Image 1 (cartoon, rainbow, N blue to C red):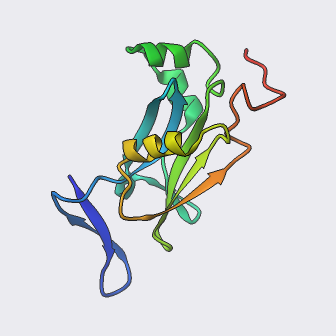
Image 2: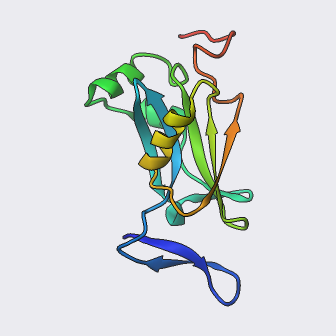
Length: 144
């Protein structure tokens, strides 16, 4: 179902169904060969974690993945953290999406990620995070 979120008279964030607004999502992603691989849900279906709504685990998704495309086969052929990756979370109190990413992803790459998560009409923060370091960015990386 497509829709958007807005505050009701009590200040709570409520979902308003609509055919016009995108289906904003939260979840995890990899960026490989200019393609996004993601595991995401509409943010209304995400999991509360502290002050954010989030979803997914890179390791769990990678471990369960049965590759069907060439890009999925490429992801599965190395450790789950070999390629650039990140996470998109939502801060409901501030009505802001935050994209955590590997610092090797540029603005065009991040725009492709945001487009795949259908995030529009919300404020967005971008945060470089040491947790999301690929083999090329992490000097201590060992592919096992």
